[in-house]
Image (cartoon, rainbow, N blue to C red):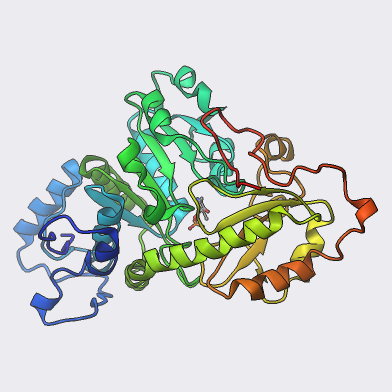
Amino acid sequence: MAAQASAPPGPRALATEAVHAGRDDLAGLGLHAAPIDLSTTYPSYDTRGEAARIDAFAADGALDDGPPVYARLANPTVARFETALARLEGTQSAVAFASGMAALTAVLLARGAAGLRHVVAVRPLYGCSDHLLTAGLLGSEVTWVDPAGIADAIRPDTGLVLVESPANPTLAELDLRAVAKDCGTVPLLADNTFATPVLQRPAESGARLVLHSATKYLGGHGDVLGGVVACDEEFARRLRQVRFATGGVLHPLAGYLLLRGLSTLPVRVRAASANAAELARRLATDPRVRRVHYPRLGGAMVAFEVHGDPHAVTAGVRLITPAVSLGSVDTLIQHPASISHRVVDAADRRSSGVSDSLLRLSAGLEDVDDLWQDLDRALGPRPSRSDVPAAAPRVSAAPTAPAAGRTAVAS
Ligand SMILES: *Cc1c(COP(=O)(O)O)cnc(C)c1O
C-alpha cells in the first residue's frame, strides 16, 4: 500500500542519495520530477482483497506495494520522501508525520501502548519536546538526567531514552555511542534536526530512532512543516499504525517539497555551516559577547551570550530575520528564553544552560560579510577599553557539559 520507490542498485554516497533516493523508479515511469498524488481515496474493486490487506496492516503494520485504501494509511509521494530520508540516515525505514511534534507524539504513543510509559531524557531539548514530556500530556512520565545518569534512571517500564545532539538551543553535544550503550535494550531516540544526516547519522552510533523536525533543514526553505522518524522496519510498523489511528499525516504536497529539499541538503548544510563557523569565529573575539557555543561537529547553528540586552539584538537586525525556527536558506535569530524555550520552567531552562542572555542564530546562505555587518550593528556600540571585563572567557563549553565534551571553538 505504500508504493515505495524501487530499491537502489547498491551503496551510494550521501550526495548521490540526496538527489536519487526515492526517485529510482522515475525514469522507468517516463518521468523526471516526482509526481504528486493528492488522492484521499483509492478505487477498491476487489473488496475481499482489501479486507485482507487491512487485516495485515492492523496485525503488524505491514504495507504492500498496492494503492493505499485511504490517504491516512499511506501516500506514494510521502513514501518517496520516507524512502529517501531512510537512505540518508542509513536506516531500513522512515515514517513521516505532519510536524516534528507529531512524530515525537507517535513515538510516545507507540511506547505507551506497549505499557512502557516512562521516558528518560537529557536537557536541554527543543522547548516543546521538553513541555510535552514535563506536562505529561500523553500520559508519559519523565526522569530528567545528566548523560552520566541515563543507565541508573532506566526502569522496567522505561520505553524510551530521548536526547538531542547538538541540542536546541545550547548546541551541547553528547557522545551518542556512549549514550546508546547506556540505554541497553531501551530504544534511544536521537533528535538529529540540528546536525542532519550530512553531519551525523545517529543510527550508526546505536540510536534506534532518529527524529527530525523536517520543517528545518530537510525542507530548508521555511515553507513546509513536517516531521519524520528514521528507524528499523519493525518500529516503523508500529509508527504507521499509530499514524493511521491518530491522523498526524504529512500532506503529499509537503512530502513533495521535503523530497525536493533533500536534493540540496548536503550543499545547503555545508555552505550554511561555513557561514556559521565564520560568524562563531568573529563572535568569539568580540568584547560584546560573553560566550560562544559552536559544536565540534560543525553545523549551521551558533549560540552566543551577550553582555548587553539580548532583546536589543533581535530588535536591531535588518538583513537577518528575528524569528523562531531554523534551517532555512536565510539567516534567523531568536531569543530562546523568550520564544523557543519559553514553555520550559525558568529554573529548568537556566539550569540546563539556556541563560537569559543567550541568542540562537541559524546561519543561512547569504554572504558572510553582509551577515556580520548586520549582526555587528545589532550588537550595538563596542564598549570602550575600560568597560571590557578583564579576561572575559570568549568561548567555552556549555555549563552542563559531560566529560565526553560538548561545545567549543578554539578562540
Ligand atoms: C523544531 C524542532 C522540533 C519540533 O518540530 P516541529 O516541526 O516544529 O513540530 C523538534 N525538535 C527540534 C530539535 C526542533 O528544532
